[in-house]
Amino acid sequence: MSDNADIYHEMIVDYSRHPSNFGKIENPTVHYHDSNPLCGDSIDIYMNVDNDKVSDIKFSGRGCAICLACTSVLTEIVKGKSIEDVRKIQKNDVLGELGLENLQAVRIKCALLSLKVLKYGLYSYLAAKDANADALKQEASSLY
Image 1 (cartoon, one colour):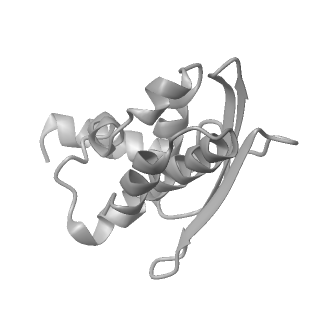
Image 2 (cartoon, rainbow, N blue to C red):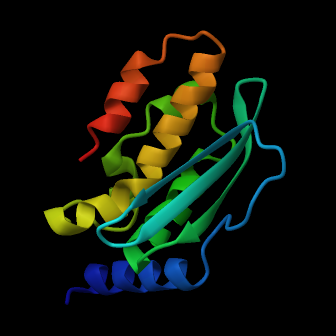
């Protein structure tokens, strides 16, 4: 393995053993759950939104090392961002943080489950506010 690959591997293992923002938020502004029954990954995302900004985000669930690492990274990316910035997050924003841009197709669902959960949760939140969120729903449904 190259030095970069070793570093990314260590990051994935560390995030899976010690995930960032793991836990639940009581009475969150946004909560959404989804799972991948083929591999057993299951993620809930809880998010508080204040003044159109993510004031807190946490996740709970179980998953493989890639799923947990990507979910941890995603929560770090999202925390403190405006809703508009969160809407713009793409799969390569998450995958790139862990050197997973060339991930095999069989593992992409593991890596992107949390982004799908986030996008659907955000869609539900925006739809409840009567905002035009159809593009976000379409993006979430076509992540992989």
